[in-house]
Length: 319
Ligand code: ADP
Ligand code: F6P
Image (cartoon, rainbow, N blue to C red; front, side, top):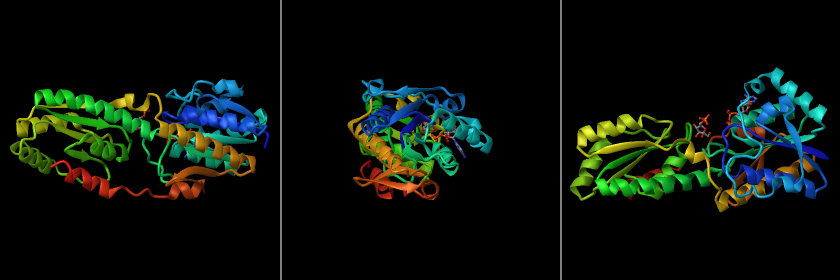
């Protein structure tokens, strides 16, 4: 394979730039040329592309977001859109493709592979909701961002003896929520994977107050939502002043952590190694410390276990 493309798709994530850089430089190192495709699958359909040299990815490893921009492309969900994408690849001389994104992006990568454009998916999303990998690119940075922000909220909650209800991202997954709950000493975490009872939370807070607990952090995953209402109810029923904060898109930005930069760099190289061998229709993941790859359809069928022990830990160490 002599000419490959790279694009980022779906929600951006810190570390995507590091992955792009690794793809571009590994490919050039191996004597290939690289086409950068802007704004996800949209850019492929619109031929919004340019050739990337080694210097085109200078000074991006430390930057959040994605140099190639990102988008959600409705047209690509239909067969007609995919076929247009295949035509574009032929026209642009793109023999193989690296797609950095989430589950939806993986489906598009599978479709292109099925039509003869070998495509490799890399897991780029802060949510960590991709079953074929223990860690996604951007997840570690997002958790660290949440931790820093919740620590700041703790300062003001402490000063006012308040309860801070904090809503964190994760779409339908609670991985960011449960990890940051442990890291920030939250009294409770509400996530889609686990049932909860607001009366029990209120009773726990009242018991905590009696034992001298003055301020409280409650982490709510966005898949549960309703943080404003929860704060109001807590205040009404416990008398503890409560405020809700929805952290929002700040969680998607910022300079990637060491872990995300290294993971993205390893995965970027791994993807090019596969394409070099003419292998497509695979997604790259990490299991423990080992990089792995799976068939895209198999990967999309996998289920990711939730860490029940970590969830239990939040209960035990927040008494
Ligand atoms: P993510 O990749 O973060 O999960 P989306 O689910 O929005 O984000 O998917 C990103 C893009 O992947 C979509 O805009 C679309 O272009 C493509 N995509 C999503 N679902 C499919 C599908 N079923 N078939 C082909 N492409 C898809
Ligand atoms: O998938 C990443 C993510 O930030 C989710 O956590 C969130 O549900 C969603 O994307 C937000 O999407 P948008 O940027 O379109 O508002």
